Length: 331
Length: 304
Image 1 (cartoon, one colour):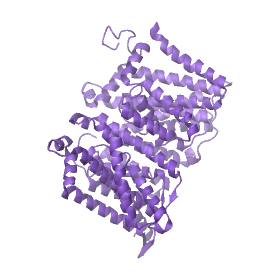
Image 2: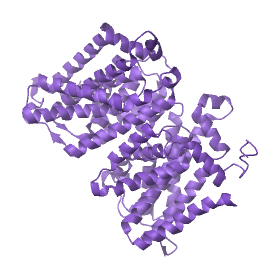
Image 3: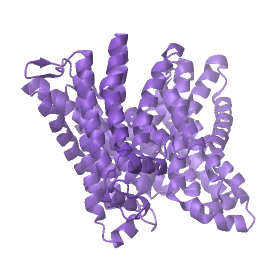
Image 4: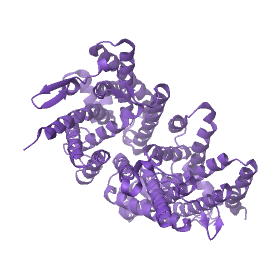
């Protein structure tokens, strides 16, 4: 029984405790910070799926986040699609983008792949910026409706918080099940040595495409949440700097560790806000935290091994709960 | 057949290509030896430009003094960069870790982190806006040759590119330190066995590469007439594209591809709006990686 307490604790904290505290403080600013932290938690978890678990260093993740945000914003403002539909559609749009990027870059490895993703990220950002007829270019898209469904108004602070929190928990759950299963093991084999994985019968090309599609789907979902909660997006929100910010989150949290990605996201969103009295030092903080964590904590705050142990003992995943000692198999 | 305007565009594109080439030379040198991407190279370029502009604003010395000062700054920057972002990850000297993916990605990320810190600190100190170079120091005096107009900056950049390229070839193939740089680039462990101080050689490579980057920075700043904190990013990425297109460890290949990129961008502005032509380089990057993974001028190499 005790094995199932932690997921419950996490869900209660995110859905009840934190919103209750925020509501008690009555500060819209704190709501805003926590919503941003949760959106970036989805982004970091999805990048962790590509870079941490499957080992494909991506420097263009913000572009897929941007595709999702623009898809949701355009659908909502021009066609009046409700948010229950725009969020999955934005994810699908970003996933299609991800597959289109993954197909040609599939056979590149290590830094060549990283640079190819940087290039595609810049191309997508440039497209959002220059295709003025479609995306309104640098003017951005204003007046994106907030969350409203079936006459239920969720556009307030608490409502938006709860929508984002539910989507985040669902996304993290899906990514958790994918990461901690046979499927995740195949991805880790791909990361350690793709030629060896190939010779063991793992379809490397298909797997890379799927990883990109899945991770970009969640990046698109995060983008849709961002568009709906801020109400205004412009290409500047989806630049190379954002890709680096998300990458820093998973490096700080620990590559390959899902809890680490969430911790990294919360840390790198909350820390610069806490330092706001000192001045706008966001990117300096990000750079310093990233540098020192690579130097001093190469495994990250919550490394992959401890993350796997925690997940196995408390969250189950694809492993048979409680069987860790009796058998070495996964299920 | 070719009107003067088009030729003029080609001339401008050629000088933009030379700018990329100046950066790509240092980039390729460092990549060839360490086999890691130095993401902070664009920031060395930017720091060199700022150092030169600060000196000019304070004393307005002659150009040659500015260049010497910037070279010194570039040397210090290269040395500091190597100590800060690369040395800590060379703790292990065995062959497996020298070639390992983890080490490569650690230095990639650490140089990226250092470049973010440097750029943001410069932005905090000097402000994010464009900072103009004092007018009398700018290299923008027009020179009319027939129907074409050049500026002095284009000749200076051309001269600097030729001098750097020749100097580097001399350094690499005619001096002792060049011999050890080539030895370390070829096989770090073997170089160590025959008594080459690999650590010093790597520092020397960084210093030489960064001096070139910094000089490129100040010359370009004088040619364009302004400096700004993010000036290193786009040319840095394009120099990287040139390096990949040229086959990674081939310096002549990188120079040729850099000039080609500059020309391609200039021609593209004929047909496309400014914003789209910026993306030509990324398109070339993808095409090269997909169809010529070994680069246009590179030899055979391991999987890319």
